[in-house]
Length: 426
Length: 171
Image 1: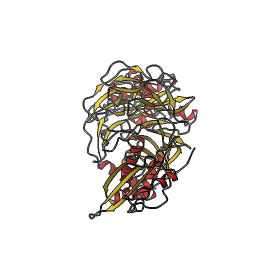
Image 2 (image 1 turned 180 degrees about the horizontal axis):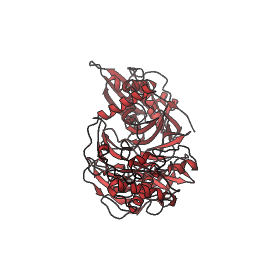
Image 3 (image 1 turned 90 degrees about the horizontal axis):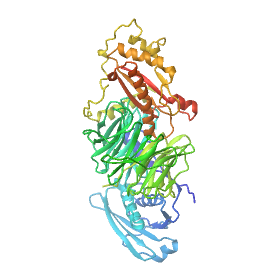
Image 4 (image 1 turned 135 degrees about the vertical axis):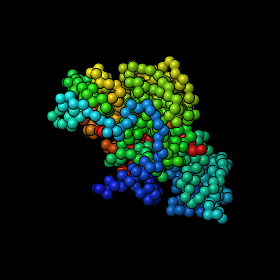
């Protein structure tokens, strides 16, 4: 059941190092647990695919495999033209329920067009077809998009192989906010500081990240425009400024300020204007997170004596308690469909990732680790990315919301923490 | 080593220079952190002279307040120390104080930031009760982000349940 598969991209690591002049803590992916009923699928080699050192289909196969939802069937190593008729019987006898074929066609302008088709070998029918124009440097992103296509056709939900993740790498005397592809490849540093960086969170548009920097010896909230490489202060009031959370329309941030005493919830426009207080308590209110419909803000509060999760209407109003089991429940994150909540629960001194069905209030512990932090849902809700510790080092890991698929994203160097999964690519 | 430092400095400079100035927000009470020239200490028999801040024989050189587990109350042993710091602030109106609260490593980063804030707040309130001017004092938190001790032991956690006092020129 438990498999260990290590995938890394040394050539891209080298490229990233050359591009920036500094070594990135490149993440790789290890599958430590897979789904129970994986769909057997084959991806035949694409004629013309070897346009750079890495083959397009290896990106597709790696994506599908590490999702934990597919069992990759050996396609035999023969490149099959996109227009060839499918030998359904052969593929069925190999054990594949689905088979993808494709071909890379060079264009006159130095660009390429990749055409691909997906077939159901049981029904002996074509499931879909597509074509993507791309340059030779877009091999990985093209592979991710084809993997997303196959994933969606076979599971009925959108794939997240083309999305990005953000996280913080701590090395000696240095903190870096890095942005990488969902598979850990293509890592780039958006911001570096000698002081800590915490709580990065993606704006719904995927172009901006809010985070907390301690650059000025105190926590201050910034909004960083990734394409422009520019940032502005979103909250720098007297005291601490932390825990930014985007509203679903991307216009406002729920934030935690201490300008009036202990940590309390406020709303502020993304440009830093229009601050209003959202809730009041005698103790700590922190870690706000909007429900995807924008109606509620979930948060952590010690108003009942121990940290528990509560919610308040986004326009203010009556506070309802959400968690009741145990004496430590923090870091609420609502799933993209609004139906469940990932959070961190303390059980016998261990901090573990848990999920609650919001309608039935049923809870499930998803991990067997003891220092889990900072859950973040994939935009399709399938996986939850989180930070944990293995062998005394901070690493990222991911688990499916049903607890079956388990991945680790180990890094070659540094402590990796504070993951945030970005939205679907626009 | 020096070369590495130079590279890091350059990288940091590059990171800074690519960002335009942040919009002004006059909400912070201690935004003027470069203005060392505004400091005009008054003499109180020398006990509260700013030179005492770094004098190991002066109580003003002691800047740490430790807290019990899950507690945000100032232990009685630290009250004489805070009295001295309150008197320093009263005697040196141009000086500002930054109180940085800390927390141990267990649990959520943001919740620990709030716990560190509670400790910093407790120190700030005690100083105000002892006569310090609110405008001189800012309470902030470093949560569990800057641990003094990094082992997962009770002794280590106790060292990190702490508030530190910094004065103008030190932050």
